[in-house]
Length: 491
Image 1 (cartoon, rainbow, N blue to C red):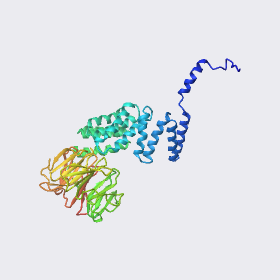
Image 2 (image 1 turned 120 degrees about the vertical axis):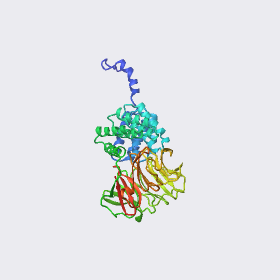
Image 3 (image 1 turned 60 degrees about the vertical axis):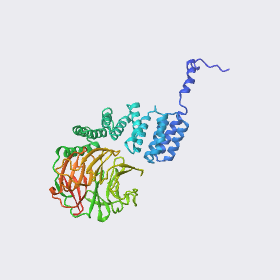
Image 4 (image 1 turned 30 degrees about the vertical axis):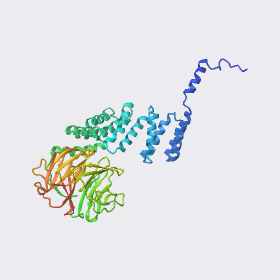
């Protein structure tokens, strides 16, 4: 029998704790790490199938390891960033939330799930589930970097629901409680826009200036600069509109019966030329054909990505398509607008209602008087003109009137008809009007429907067939003169 020297015998206390130590070691901890690193190597080499197979093996063999939550988040990002399949990412985020809520990755997972749910919402009432996820991030992980972004998204959701005070508080929390966060400039910009909705113009301007001072290099600072200048000009200075003549300067008789205008998000002007049955993009001094021929276009729109949407009695023609998408029984389209949800609002001259098509092609009908012109609003709804009722209606995202402006309000004389409407990102609305005592001219209204600036074409020395208009970022009005084949600018 072998007898160990006392110097080689383990202490009795150590013999007692060895079983406990063995039980506290994570099973196959080394295997989990090796599988995770192997998947990372494959992912970096863009061998995505190998990476996913390896990570799925980790989830199956070592679900209790610290690497399991990391894998779930990585696979979710893969489905979003490489496959562009939000639905495929959801099961991984749900499992992360359900089984690994205490993990360091849970905060980012909850935030990502909330962002996806928010993106799936088609209207304010469908934001409830997304808001719950943002609340969880804020409540459970107050010190996590994801918290600032959760505040930002929660503020946007409250604002979409018309809860502006709640929205403002979330934006303020995003940049005050998390001042070092990358989303702070965006939160300050959103706070400024919310203050404007609350009719606090001085507070809005102060917030925009603060953004420019504290984050001069941020992209949001440039956005703040033009929004400040535009509001000061349109709402405080209110200069008389004057005719600057042909625009771009010196270009006359250079178009072929232009009838419709629309600015893209990046500032290019889209022009529909009826004689050519085609949309053209004016980028700088260059005029370039855009999309396929679009005969009979009655409404010209651009989406958030700058893509062209042309509507006619034949349906909706997008620039990446070759045939129009039918719009059901709508054959006498009198106006249309794209809201910030990506929904298409369409009015038909024969129908006392507005039809709203969501991104999936499904439609719903909103009760409305007959409408002859529409333009989107930053609040998510639209402004519409009803010649039958002689009113401009500012509608919320659910189609309910928020502001009603009778034709001719605050003018020396009424007008009879609205030919076209346009809007800008700061909430101003321009109306091309004609008839009755006022005659033909242009009005610029504020987000509250108040008249800011106005002029008749007679007073501006304009003689032509003006069929459309657009608002540029400096507060100028671009007019489309079909008779003289040119554009005019009012400033």
